[in-house]
Amino acid sequence: MANGKMLSGRRIFLRLSLPTMLAALLSAFVFAVPLQAQEAPVAGTPVAEEMTPAEGSIGVTEEMAAGDEVLLAGEGELLPNDLSPWGMFMSADIVVKAVMIGLVFASIVTWTIWLAKKTEITRARGRARSGFAALASATSLEEANDKLRMAKGPVPQLAQAAMREVQLSGMSPEKEGVKERIAWRFQRIEANTAREIGIGTGVLATIGATAPFVGLFGTVWGIMNSFIGIAHTQTTNLAVVAPGIAEALLATGLGLVAAIPAVVIYNSFSRSIAGYRAIVADSSAELLRLVSRDLDQGRSPRLAKAAD
Image (cartoon, rainbow, N blue to C red; front, side, top):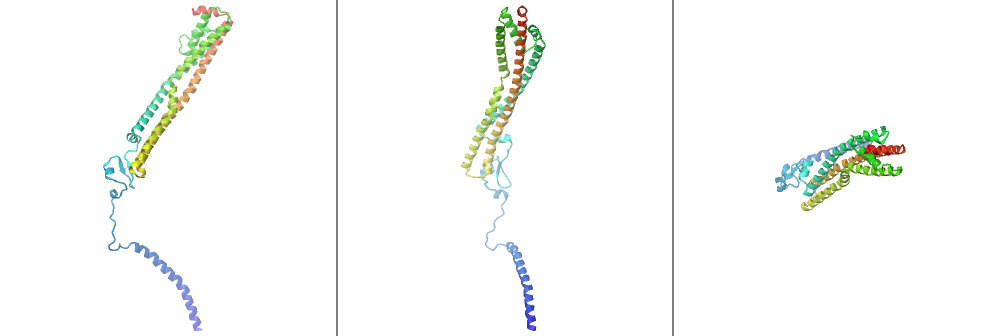
């Protein structure tokens, strides 16, 4: 009986002590690892000297330290001092500089044409509207010519051309021939007017079509020089090639800056010129109507006398 109690007590003790022992061993192992890591190095083992930021920087040479175009970053990379657009332009290759200067000049030309042609087209359309209003209120070619005597623009030219043709035709009984000759005169005046008002818009079309490709040429040239620099330095450090690539991409950006406004302004001018030509064409039709009415009513002798 006593032996049975002793055996059961031992079993209970073992059941309680085994988890406790395992927990103690695990705790000892966990606390022993940091203690071993913090131990002093064994005698004879070389200790690495503390490196200063200047000595531990990667890729620093005497030439780089002496130059004024590089700056040490926090992680040892070499970066240019000035990454602004002006700084990248000054450090760019001569070909890339020429491309950038050409694109800036093209942009200046674009905005100059916009300012000049905007004023010209606005004035021309205003004169054409005034002339058409005068023709719409006239009842004869003679009256229309009197109203437009002091006016400027293509509408007075149309009225004078019609009056001149009536004068030269005199008492000709061929009314259709007179109107046909007047229509030919009107066609030439309209063509000259469209050619004059469209001067300068072709430059905008050229800039809008070629500026992106010119900028792309500068980009290709700059990236080519960057890869040549990689081959010469024999390094894959991004800081070595990043400035050259940034300069090359700046050329593409300038190409877009020159091309996008040129295309937008050209399209705007095309719509304005089309509206202006429509007003001139309406004026021609109105004058032909007045001429036809005068011929049908037998006013051609009076018109010829008035023209004399």
